[in-house]
Image (spheres, rainbow, N blue to C red):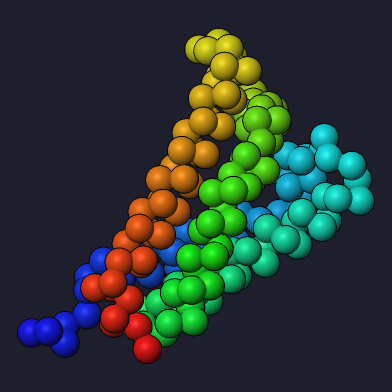
Length: 155
């Protein structure tokens, strides 16, 4: 019974893989990415795009490594999630949510969020929620994978 693998490791690994894959699929549309982050200086947009994709690829690889209970992937993922917590607002800037909502309104002309709620208020709520979800998930991961009972399962 002591040799059984913790289910939490498997759950976190699968979530990390699924989130990384879904975000990679979202990031394939470079024109949309440029629109969302057009407030940045033009030379920084491709660098941010490359960096964002790189983080998702690292997350995908680490998720697979965690499912194999490899220590180096546990450590890299811990570092990745500390980085996420430290740079959460850089990852989810307010203006990106505002741009996204405007983009959605332009595509779906009949779908006007601004009729229901002030666009700036809604973008602010989205920013807070996205930052909070990232911080909660990253903190939970760091807490869980730093516990001695969990660390002992990694080789």
